[in-house]
Length: 582
Image (tube, rainbow, N blue to C red; front, side, top):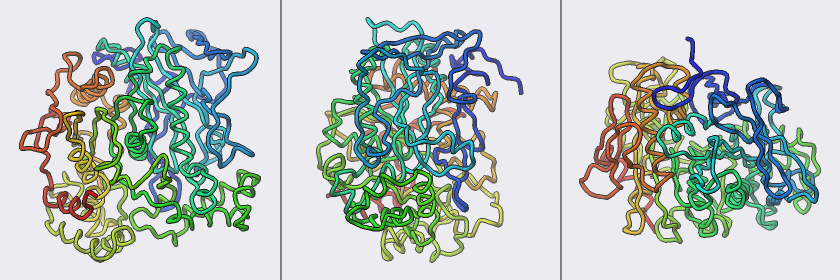
């Protein structure tokens, strides 16, 4: 299928040759892993070739100077956008800075030009092949900026800062914001797009006694704060408005946003938030000792067994030794966390960035009075559900390590109705026999437990005259096969919200939905309200209220519409009663 490199009628740039080209490997999902029995690599964003600059006809090299650093970016005139990539916001966390809080990247004593034409390397994580390994480094604390051309310091633009997902152990910030920026210009409300890398897995989320005592819990979240501080202090030089920063993310990225949202120390760093398939209570956030054994196993596999010198030892260990130790923990069948078995590295309550249990913070703690958008996909739980579930006991076994046996049993009984099975649009179609008879029940429970329940709880807790917020439900199955075991799966919206799905379909209805979703988000980033009179004709989206009013926006290519937030009422209410507000 031949693709044009021109801008479409929706104002969304397309074409395979742009330096930020997005490559969809299989299905759009933010979790990037390579372990047997887990999710495969399903999404990757790449720049062509190596990270070294390549000078070619038709490209220009815009420069932005901040203090003694001049950043030399890359521009392709036909796209009317300028890219600055691999910008360091903190010193490389290597050697003595490994397993330490981020140190802000200093201004050099002498002027220097920094080549900023490609994305930085992704942070340490499991890799699938040698090429992946070459793109992975501890020296990864960088961010990237994409802006329209001809920005004016007199008219600074809103900034959308993206935090990637990946279960806190995978992924990178190499996202293609070109269609989003193109759409924003087309509709007359241009924005600047920023994405960032942060430390992952054991490097970003060390736990246990030593990590607690040295004050190095939640390093990945602290990296995000350091990046936001860099944006606040420097984005004006790139034409951005430091007083109009929208922080948004998907999956673990959305969970990250929620940790900052309810942290008063981050109050000055952003002004609006979008939570895509993730909320404060999506993952259990434990005290630091709960998962200390995971970090202890990581250290032991790295040859560091003396508790009094464990961090000193890890700082001097070869990085490949640490990577092998990380892979061992990720693949250890004895790391039994039930539905969270493959997420051993997560944020923890540290008394600072996360001062208390997120549910407590959400309901009664210091909360930011900022507008926000939150939403989920129809079949969020499918990719997190093992295919071998053949009985209700199998489902209970999956849930018990997190919920306890009684609550797991009671929750499973809430889904006895065969209509309450995910994928919800499966109809009379049948799945491949590899999927057990209770897979669909397990997928429904996983989706509600991890995503739909936390989303609804956050919306209900956020009802306040001091703050408006909006909720959506993404149900579009236009590109989903009728017999797909994944349905409208976790991560599918990335292709729509970034517009990259248009590389693989020419359907007008899908293109219209992409434009509509972008318009809502760009309007929100610009004004704090997703409704304006610009761009794609679309339904007025009312702020969320707990009443009969239709206040949930259902996004679908057949036509988006408003509905009441009452789907699976009994099941979601049961979940919220089971985890009552403090």
